[in-house]
Structure formats: structure tokens, C-alpha cells
Image 1 (cartoon, rainbow, N blue to C red):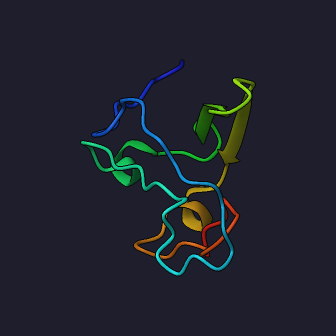
Image 2: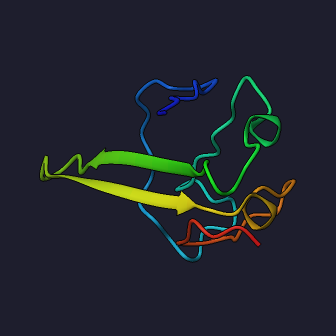
Length: 91
């Protein structure tokens, strides 16, 4: 069963180019949801989380899909611990 979880912000937005020297991470976006994903994700055997993003380069107009899967809840959902930089990793 596929469940599309609504996000608080699901409109188009503009991100600045990745810059490893940007200490404020203006190139990043934090997704937030209306419901606690932790309470919805009941079983690692039958459920997992996928973030799928389609981005378009504003100069060339070319697009690309990005996908990140989180398969184990205990290692994927953590409170306010994100890798800073060019990564989708959670530590």
C-alpha cells in the first residue's frame, strides 16, 4: 500500500547553489509534516520512507530526479540531527 504523506510546505521553491563555505546552509531545505512520521511508521518489515525530489536547473532548464530511501526506522528518524553539507544523511 502506497501512502503519500502530506508535507506542511509542498509548493515550489528556489534553492541556492550548494556552497561548502555557506555556514547558514541557504542551499538546503527542511521538510516538515503535519503528522509524526515516527507514529505512522510501525514496521520495518512492511514500511519504509522515500523522499523523492525532482529539481530543474534554472539556467539550462534541465531536470533530474533524486531519491533517498530510509529502510530502518531506528536509524532513520532522529530528532534534530542532520548532516551539514551536500548530503541526505542523518546522523
